[in-house]
Length: 89
Image (cartoon, rainbow, N blue to C red; front, side, top):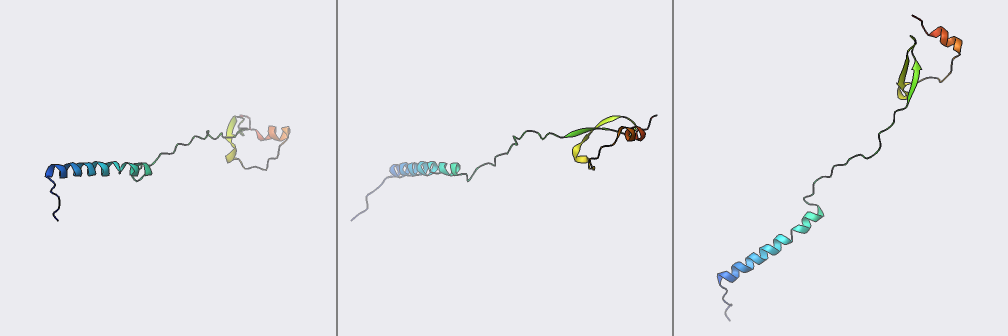
């Protein structure tokens, strides 16, 4: 029994069809993420509010200080102690 004779034009058309089919089979690889770019993450949280407190300096100026920088016993002083503490220029 002899094998059927296939001419070159049929061979080329089969190769083109097979190449096209194999090229289309690569598209799912893109979807699965083999060639995926890294996504950038953007923070959407609101900006943290800094708690501040107004304090009086020894020379009598009123300043606003961040609460994270304050470590005190949270003991209030009397008016007379305050008047003696402030230096008048």
